[in-house]
Image (cartoon, rainbow, N blue to C red; front, side, top):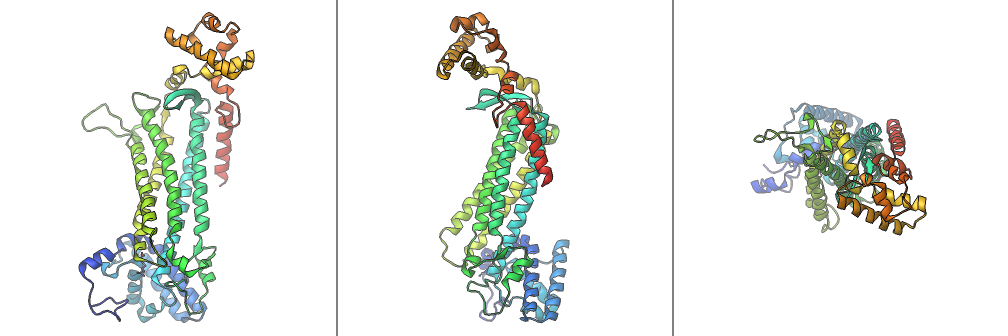
Amino acid sequence: MSNKMWGGRFTERPDAIMEEINVSIDVDRHLYAQDIAASKAHAAMLSAQGIITANDAKNIAKGLDTILSEIGKGTFDFKRALEDIHMNVESRLGELIGPAAGRLHTARSRNDQVATDFRLFVRDTIDDTDRALALFQQALASRALEHAATVMPGFTHLQTAQPVTFGHHLLAYVEMASRDRGRFADARQRLNESPLGAAALAGTSFPIDRAATAKALGFDRPMANSLDAVSDRDFVIETLSAAAICAVHLSRFAEEIVIWTSPLVGLVRLSDKFTTGSSIMPQKRNPDAAELVRAKTGRVIGALNALLIVMKGLPLAYQKDMQEDKQGAMEAFGALSLAVRAMTGMVLDMAPDEARMKLAAGDGYATATDLADWLVRTLKMPFRDAHHVTGRIVAKAAGDGVALHELPLKAMQAIEPKITKDALAALSVEASVKSRTSFGGTAPKNVAAQAKAWLKRLEKE
Ligand code: ARG
């Protein structure tokens, strides 16, 4: 038997390998809810415009509801010979309601159908991701408030640089997640136009009401150009770009967790809930979740690259290449969602080793800048001279094998006679963080205020 959707023109069945390369039902079945919603909106509009009868529209809607519940229950028989979700649904509708099913496809094509379904799907994904990121931010901000004054080493070049607070470090990721959410929101706003009714590529001769279907599906308006409507996938690419940037942020944080939890560093501990053991080495506590978050970034960036490459050579309008837009994107969105939730779990779970953090914060002459700042502030020394004097003091301490605050005042005065014991007070890690009160700085009172402001803002959303 030839295909029942286009059997008029065909007499033979497709070759098995043709069917195999063409079939997309394993992927686009995930669009079933969106496909059915769009078909219902389309049928209601066709009836309101007098293109099909109210009775046919009613039966179509009823049939579609039955299909929705069959798929939801797992009793729907997806047929590979029917290629994709659109034809599977339409064919089942025919079994359920008879010839009226054939009227549903009036004034539309699978080209505008799939573009509509996928826009709705990506929009739902953005909404889910936004909610997950808000919970991630909430977890970060609450831990930041708890650790607003917990001193830890801040790093540049992965070398101890200046003391910061753990809360400050966590709030950095709240800011990043906020920009990520902004990028998703931008993508959502731009994608929220309806392709439905663009038909195959040229529009239709039927008196359809595209504004009505757009409204019924929650779109802001119909897309203005039928060729553009069926042939661009920039909405997926843009969302994947936002996803890739977000995944990179999560990956950097995951990498930090891997470093912090290494026994060589030992700044943070994860509980048994977020660690795994080794089948051979009984002592191991591996941060697998963090490593997998780091690795999932590959999928997201990969999906973005893959779709850019699929699209870059395609002339207008629809080309079958575009069927390859879904699998990678769906996998990437799934990976990102898991990564955000795993990071949220780890943020709530992690326990900083405060004593070790404090000790490490003072290591490596991390308060040298504070001494230079003291020389500038108290002795009115130009910063460059202060930097030089401090450098000589650090060299002396390093030569004697002592920390900066352990160096006797006399030894400092041998290098700069005007140094008083006041300077020594500036060299503790607590004094150092406390003094960083500039806007956006690490002072505990800044951090607590920012954490509170975030928590309040997130609660209101
Ligand atoms: N399964 C197809 C896709 O995902 C639907 C559109 C088919 N259109 C066509 N002209 N062959 O792209």
